[in-house]
Length: 556
Image (cartoon, rainbow, N blue to C red; front, side, top):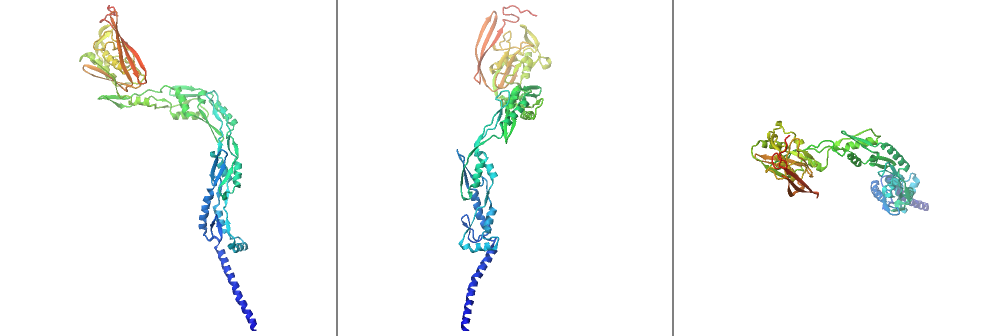
């Protein structure tokens, strides 16, 4: 009995020693199962980092770092002549962050109890490595490989041209060279990008233009038909017909995604149209100027003449033309924007006195009234470069309604009285100002009798309808005529911008029977370097009513 009791007591001691580890394992197993989703299982590693026991949010930080590293992995594509380096993310690889974090969280947590228990039991002896989860997007890679920087030689699209010949024709397209996109995509799909930088040797492939030559030829035929009648342009009361060739040489073709578009080179078309309408479409509005204490003051700016054509109307005509054409293309004028013309209109080109001449006369004679009346009329006259002025046309008949009175004059070689007599003193003063101002003296005639108040041989007269004084502003700037006077003198000042130097070279006086003949040479040096010499002539009879032989002139 005693021995039996001793044997029984031994087992009682063994059983607790066996049950205690089991209990501990059960508690650990229960803890492992309960921790699923709350923390990473023990002995789980990812990209060289131990994730054991980390909360999913902390593990997500580590995986996020790996995602950035993965997407930045260099992918080198050898094109032959050069290499292109892109990142994995750029060439079509997408990192599956959610799937990777899910794999880390579920590591050692299988769906079925027994496999999960086995995995748990082996934890101290086996490390679970979590792999990167990613995918490759072939469409994204294809789009990147089709970009310009992967093209070795770009294809040249067919071009519409005419080389100034009659008809439009096509210059054929030329194939380019790029990578074999399908071959590179296959290599990318097989690459182990998760293991580090990738290097791929790309094969080359021909790149065809997006528009076939035969399609471009069809466009050329349509354009030739559209333009065969040219373009009839209308502006104000003027018309001009641009030929088919003139229109076609300003057409431009562009190809995008296999479609050829025809447009106009608007700068060229506008220049072509403006060349067809070279003259201003309207009048020049001259400025109103005053001279105050020797300074030119602009009272009212003028406007350059409108010209062809406004950009908006050219664009509208171009659009209408390419949409199918019309019978007429109406254009609008535009303001002259040439700085020179603008300065002529706003008065800024008139800055200084460039010539001035004074003649004297006795006070208070009736002829002085006529001199001053004409001076008042001429004050402020603005002569544009190239503009010609005839005094008889500009001033018109000298009448009493205009303030002229009867005074001494020469008619048919005899001294006489007539309405407006004496204005020749103003004409002589103006003639000399024009002489020294460098203007062209187109038509003039000296008095038939010499008067000592005038320079010998350098003077002119005026009568209705002849003789006349006609002069042209041959300088590069507008000229403002500004007469002033007092009781005993008349002065004509010309304001402009000085651009011509005038020198009186010599005077030759000869006799022709009893008449005297004068020739005065004038040298003009213009700012552009031109030098011109002209000669002013005058003839004087021996006396009132006498011809060069000293005989009386018959009176008609």
